[in-house]
Amino acid sequence: MTISLRDKRPAKDDPTIADRLRAHRTLADVPQAELDWLIEHGTLGRWLPGDVVVTKGSAINELFFVLEGRLSAIVGQRKVMDWRGGDATGMYPYSRITVSSTGSSVDEPSEVLAIDRADVNDMPVACPHVTAALVHLMIDRARTFKASDLEGEKVASLGRVAAGLAHELNNPASAATRGAKLLESAIDESEDAARALGAVYVTDVERVVVERLRATCNEKRQSPILSPLEHADREDAIAEWLASHDIDDRGAPALAGTAVTIAMLDELAGAVSRDTLRAAVRFVVAGCQVRGLARDVERASSRVHDLVSSVKRVAYMDRAISPEAVDLRQGLADTSAILAHKARAKSASLTVDAPENLARAFGIGGELSQVWMNLIDNALDAVGNGGRVTVIARREGPSVIVRVIDDGPGIPEDIKRRIFDPFFTTKPVGQGVGMGLDIARRLVESNNGRLDFESVVGKTEFRVALPIA
Image 1 (cartoon, rainbow, N blue to C red):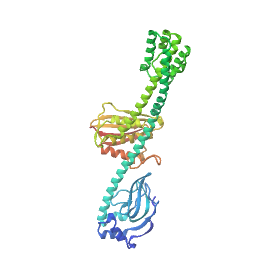
Image 2: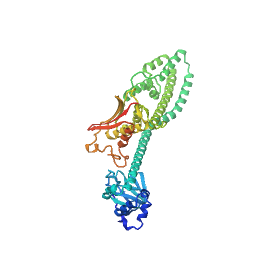
Image 3: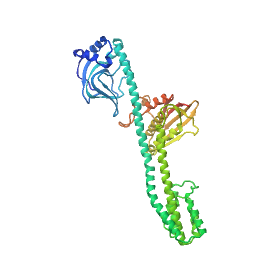
Image 4: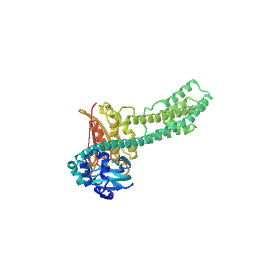
């Protein structure tokens, strides 16, 4: 959709147009004869603030020399560049563009000189100096859009990283806070239990049995990891043993999480008196609780540290932006860790299969991290609930090959040819500036690599080939 110029009139009817074109920055050095040609073929008109000059996907049929005012190019909700008096926009000579990849709107009252498409096609012969100036502008505009695309995708990627980090940090941070709060009361209970045990007479033989049982709390369990049901059964068995010996069974969860067995408890019961047994079990349970909470806080804090380290590695915060030997295995693992929340939200599996001795690629680590973020994020968008995304990295000849595979519905044939178009997306309006595949391909190619894909129903594979360092 395009809003037509307001107050349209032939340029030659304006007595001041020659002086205004001479003062135009783009046309300042062109011969008068070419300015006369523009005046003869041009149309003057205005736009008002809020007018939509063109929408994304609309046909571009005119060249506009902006005489005054300001227009903006908009992608989604993001302004990528603007044009003011002295600039030119629209259809340039030699440009192959036929439809707009962005939207354009009017910020200030603007007046332009419009040249129709048919006349623009004649400009290389009729106005060679104007054409040369416009070609330079077209190159500059392409550079500006490319830089803006990359910057916009970096911001979008940063948003995904921030969202992923927020999700992943929530659980360990909450666990660390909860454990730290419980630890204070657990330490008080441990001290009270120690005093209670010290108040009863304990022989040297009994003390050895008690200390051996308490030390078991520090041991790592040798048995396989228990399922939730198996753990519940173990907790019930310990609670029953405590109740049968007239001991408070609230200590069962603390003992169930350790390597303490019923046989060990029986040994303790057979070695001490009934009164000593109560004090000894309380002492053991209190010690198990303190150590268990300390381990929980340590695990949660380590998880927070690992996540922050992953983000730092993905962003290459402390590295220069220059080619180097890049550890793809670590980069893929870090990216997967940051996007794990998205997989969990769909009950989807996200796995990385890369050997420890995977050859390093030669490239700019931060740019490659952005590629993995885009490809894995898109793959997770493609799969349904319970779907599967697999990332495989292997060395093949002089290259390292990374494959991102999903079991989604596949890419329709009519979309495949457009998949790398700038700003193209199949996502609903407002969800991103595009699929990021145009950006990903440019980043891969700038690192001397290659990005291609194959897609059928049930399997889509994006393949990145990078040179070995």
